Image 1 (cartoon, each protein chain N blue to C red):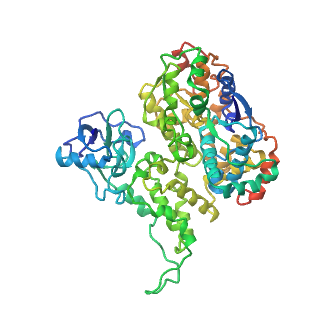
Image 2 (cartoon, each protein chain N blue to C red):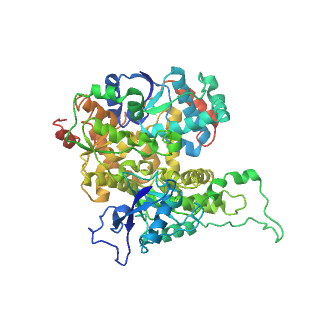
Amino acid sequence: MQFTIEVGRYNPEGTYAPSASAPQEFPVPWDKAPPRRYQTYTVDLPEHAVVLDALIEIREYQDESLAVRCACRSAICGSCAMWINGHAHLACKSKLQAFTKDGKTRVESPPSMPVIRDLVWGMEPFWKKHHAVTPWLEPKQPVPGPREEYRVANAAMDNLVQEVSCINCGCCLMDCESFAINDNFLGPHALAKAYRYAADPRDATEKQRLGSYSGNGGIWDCTHCYECVQQCPKGVAPLEQILKLRKMAVDAGFTNNAGTRHADAFAESVRESGRLNELTLMPKSTGFFNIVGQLQTLPSAINMLRAGKLPPIVHHKIPGVQRIKTIFQRIGGRFKK
Amino acid sequence: MKVAFYPGCVSKGACPELYVSAKAIAEPLGLELEELTEAPCTGAGVLSEQNPELADALNGLTLAMAESKGADLMTICSTCQGVLSNHNYHLQQDAARREKVNGTIGDQGYRYSGKAKVKHLLWMLFEDIGLDRIRGAIKRKLTGLKIAPFYGCYILRPEEYLGLRERPERKTYLEQLIALVGAEPVEYRGATKCCGFPMLTFNREKSLAMGGSHIMEAKEKGADMLVTPCPLCHLNLDGQQPDAAKVLRKDIGVPIFHLPQLLGLAFGFSPDELRLNHHVVPTASALEKVELKV
């Protein structure tokens, strides 16, 4: 079967870089990414072939100058993560047929990462974030002797299994929308890893971890877009681990942040009226004593008021709201009040 | 066709134009809206994060209410759709989880047996109402308008809960609809990206930069306006657009329409009937292209 592959070529030394227009100014890396040249190849492969088969075929038999990084070819090593048709995928796990769009498949380095050459991109941003979450166990005392081991209940490890499947390929980070506009954000892979250690019963530093992950660039800087869940080739579902961390952090008392205030104000409104009260949600989340924060939101509130887009001043309760209050009481937990 | 209509908090709060326009287009589409007036907020993912069991019970109650009406539940909000789909997926698959919900809501007049179907208006247009009926209702072709679709995350991801693996065409409905009303869909990367709204209260500047940059991308590709099936996206893309322009130091000025407003316009309603005069970003620049005024 014939397949057409369009490969994004780029070499920072200039060999493959076209003299294209200057990068734009938007704070989105894919617009800031260096311009690249797309080169088209045609390969003849069986219909079950994957994108990596095509790239190896090109490198071995058509163009030895093409740089590709790969090793296991079995979705275990994570080396061949790249952008395929504009999204993060492992080239070894992506069937060419499924990824042929308008008669071709486009592959390139992710624009949110530094490019070393062609399809080989630099993983420094990835590892920097990874190391920032202390991705190892800080053992609880007493440390078992040299011939002993930590014993934990099987059930205590069940929650960690999903994250342990992570192969550090970088697919989640390269498509992460928060990272795209915020270099400071720890990112999905590192925070999923963070959950894996914070929730490990053998770790002694849960509280310190939760405190540090609650800070700037941490769990509350995730925009909840599910791109990482969608793109992870191993089912790690990083966002779901981040949400578990948020709950752990709030339960551990790290509540002096907009995220917790937002959740509490949200719950209070639903508990008392069955509906969201948008009028009070924003000021309560910002914090009443955060004068700068309140002032920042003022112009947009005025704009919306002038357009007639503000919710009714008197917040209406849904009929049968007592039913909702009963459910809150029965379930209990943080929002019971 | 009777549907259990779940308007969501925002259409009855900060986006009244969505509620009004959704009600307006129901008749030409042959939809009989039975509003679930007693159904609670979905919690928008915020409640499930801190108290998953509570979110299960609240959404289980809503699903049970739809079930008791004997009709599919129709949302007009990508976020409501995402949260309800997520809970429905789990409550349908996991009988023990469903029974736990029923244990909480059982004496409140409702039980959920796992039969409800949750569908956004956008999906219903294609899957239940049918293109012939829509074509028949079109009285005004929107020829000349270039429209960029903006889906909102929760109607696209995670695919598993939204039935997108069985129906991948759901990812193309907005483009198809734009073409159907005679306008030209604009292809751009931002169509399936995040508007930034969930981060607005935590990291305002980044949230505004996120939404603003998607609108700018659409504008650079020639879009006269955006259309979205999600009122939360609308709050960020329209309500916060002047602030986003300040963060990006760009002149944006691109009107954002709700899905039912676009359809309503094609069905011959006046811009005022669809409350197109109640947007933060004036809609006049887009309406002029089809020789309409607000």
